[in-house]
Length: 237
Image (tube, rainbow, N blue to C red; front, top):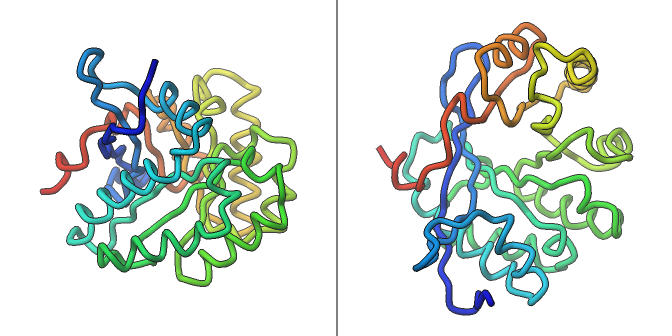
């Protein structure tokens, strides 16, 4: 039995770098639970439980708030990316909660990127539109996460004001040696170029993958080749 009512999650971050130079341009915030017996536990274990019992909003705010406080005094060119779960996207007060956290932490809205997965848009696209539009109006940037894994990728790009496309790691793995994912990645990069949207490729683990993405014009990358998730305090300096 997992009692999430009394836990405190840790803010971990994974660096995002330019594909060509390797310069750090941002960090994605990832939640971890330091279990007293089992050690560090990933979100795939506790997030489904937190969503089921209605705690995901509180836990997410805890992690995001900690990350924003720690990163507020960093280089102003460094962006912080946070993930919004499907259940949070049904919260009509989500935009107001995020704006409140920005005010409380003195974190500039233009340095925040909110990542939304395609699957979270399926339930009610019009309601999602109202939330993302409110976030956009505050100067927050929006990323369409796991692009290409859903059935309505192009429709979402057309109907919602996204600023960034994130290519799912499933297409990046072995992209340098597998023709099918390579063709998909090329198509996404070509589309993004036509739409003037920057692309971040997730899950880059080998130098061959990085080299392929750079040749094809990918803007930014993240993954174990660049750096594994670490406590946000590790990047304070």
